[in-house]
Every structure is written in structure tokens, then in C-alpha cells.
Length: 151
Image (cartoon, rainbow, N blue to C red; front, side):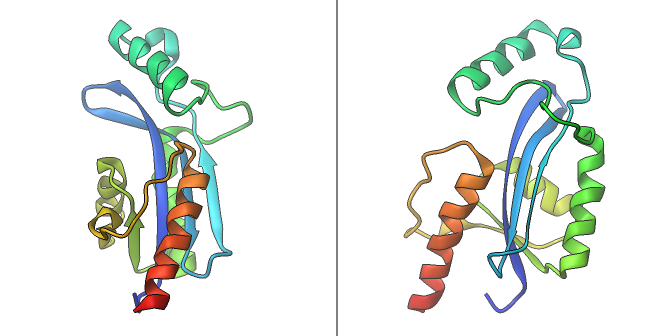
């Protein structure tokens, strides 16, 4: 844990077999103060989605993430998230990304060419019962710091 790390979580919506639109992202640096929260507009309008993706989104909206399809305030498009996230990481000097499960977090770390670590490997981690990225990150952040203090 000597490296300058950050912890992040992503909520996404699937719009095709090959693309997951990042709908909301939250990242918190090792210092516990520097953070960034982003929402983004999906790459396709809801009406352009195949029925199965509309149905999947409605299920997730109702039972999982509770997000609207489009953000309520001005937000960048999904495809603009990676450069914005990269700028935050470079400006902050982040060397390692931590995440809780999730292939999209791992894939984003790989796209940013950053080493990453799935904190599910720590058996001591208690599950965060939320699908809000900010809530989840803060829950796991405090647990990681407690583990660091114990070692």
C-alpha cells in the first residue's frame, strides 16, 4: 500500500452486446479528501435500445442502481469519461487502482494502463449494501484504511 492508490466504483448500463455505458462513477484518492464523481449520458437514446436492453435497464433502475437513463444535470457523454478519468489520475499521480469486484472497473484500469487490484481478495471486507458508487467507495475506503492500520 506504499503506492499512491485510489478506490473507485462504477455503475453502468448495457446498450449492446459489446458496450457498457458508464452511467455514474466515483473515485477517491488514498488521502481520503481528493475525489471525483461523474455521471454521463449514454451513447444511445433509450428509444434506440433493443427491447432486451430497455427491459434490463428498467429492472436495474427499479431494483439496483435507481438511476434515471439520462442524468438530471449537464454531464459528459459516456465516451468522454475515460479521458476525464485519465486526467484526474495523471493530475493526482495515482499509481494503483483498487476496486470491489466488477469487470468494468478492471477493464477501465486496463484501458488507463494502470495496475489494479480487486479488494474482494481481502477476506476481511464486509459487503457494502448499496449501489451508489460514493456510498460503496466510502464504505470500502474506511475498511481498507482499518486493514492498513492493523498491519
